[in-house]
Amino acid sequence: MNYLSNRVNAVSESQTIAMARKSRELKSQGIDIISLSLGEPDFATPQIIKEAAKNAIDNNFSYYTHVSGYVELREAICNKFKRDNNLTYTPDQIVVSTGAKQSIANAVLCLVNEGDEVIVPAPFWVSYLEILKLAGGLPKIIETTIDQNFKISPTQLQAAITPKTKLIIMSTPCNPTGSVYSKEELKALADVLEKHPSVFVISDEIYEHINFCGGHQSFAQFESIYDRVITINGVSKGFAMTGWRGGILAANKTIAQACDKIQGQFTSATSSITQKAMHKAMELDFETYIKPMRDQFLKRRDLVLGLMKNIKGLKCNQPQGAFYVYPDISYFFGKSAQGFTIKNGTDLTFYLLDKAHVALVPGAAFGSDNYIRLSYATSEENLIKAIERIKNALDALSFG
Ligand code: PMP
Ligand code: GLU
Image (cartoon, rainbow, N blue to C red; front, top):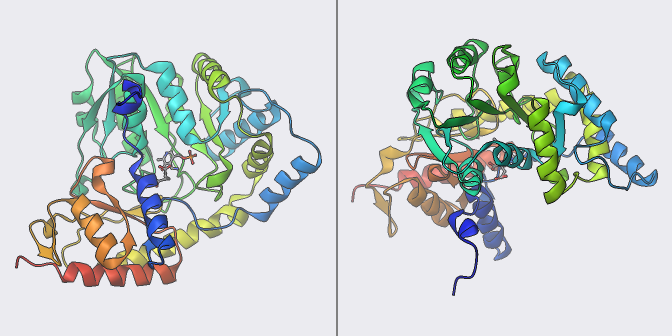
C-alpha cells in the first residue's frame, strides 16, 4: 500500500545525490570507485572562515536569529552585492537560508501557482523541475544544443513566453554545462523580458566565483527588470562550504518578505554558527582566498579537456565556469561490450560505473540523455586515473 502523498510520489529523487550514494555504497564494498558525480569542491573551507565559526560557538552565538539571517550578516551580503556585482540591495531584500536549494524552493513556492508556466532552459540543474512539481508549476523547457554552447537566444525566450508564463529559472555559470552568459547575452534576454512585465526570473548565480572568462554578470544589473529578478547565491561552491548550508536570496521587498514567511514556517533561520561563517566569507578578499581555488578548477578543466580529446566519440565544448564537463556521447549509441548495450546516457553511466568504476551523472538528470556530466572537483591524480579508465571502457564498445 502506498500511503505517501501524491505530492511526494510525483517527485523524483535528486539523481546527483543518488549517484553519489551509489558510489559510496560500492566503495564501502571495497570497490575502488572514482566519483566524479557530485558537484562539490574537494577543498577545505578557508581557515579564517572556520575560525569565525569557532569564535561564534565560544561566544555563545547559539540562539535563534532573525529568520532571514541576523541583520549585520545581511548588511555584509548587501556590501558584497555592491562590491562584486554593482547591485544595490538593502538588508530587507535579503533572505539567508540553508542553501541555494532552499532559496530556490522559497522563491518558487512564493511565486508559482498551480498551472503557471515556468520556462527552464535545458540542460538545467536537477532540482529545478522537482521543486516546480512541488509547487504545481508546469515546466516549459527550452532546448539548447552544444553548438549554441547550451545558451538560449532571445528568439527562443520570446517564443516560449505565453500569457501563462510566470517565471524563468536558469543558472549562469550553468550546472551542468559550465556555460556562462556574457553581459550582452543577458541584456538581450532582459530586453525580451522587459516587454513581459508579469514574468519573473530566478537567476541562480551560485557558481559566480568559478568563472574562467572574466567577471561574473548578474541578471539583476538591468534596471528594467531588476525588480523582477530573484538573485540566488550562496557559499557552497565559491567558498568550499557545501556542508555548512548557507544560501542567499536577494529580491524585491515583497518577495523577500514572502520568502521570510515561508522559511519561518519550514525551517527558520539557518544555523547561527553558519551565519557567522558566511559573514566572514562575504568579507574575504577574492584574490587571496577564492582565486586560488578557482585557478585549480581552471587547471583541472584544461587537464580534463586535454585528456578527453584522446577519446574517440566524445563531443565536448569548452566550459567557461562551474566545475563540470558535459560531453555529447550519442556516438556510442547502439554499441555494446561485456553484456551492456548503450542506448542512452543512462546506459553509458551504468556501463562506466560497472566496468570502469567511475561514477558520473546521466544527462537525463539535466534534461537530455545524449550527454553525461563529469564533475572535475577532485584531484588531478583522480582525474587522470578516471579518464584513463573511461577511455579504456569506451574504446571497448563496438557494433559487434
Ligand atoms: N544551484 C545549482 C546550479 C547547484 O549546482 C547547486 C548544487 N549545490 C545548488 C543550486 C544548491 O546549492 P546549495 O548547496 O547552496 O544548496
Ligand atoms: N549541486 C550539486 C550537483 O549538482 C550537489 C548535489 C545536489 O545538491 O543536488 O551535483
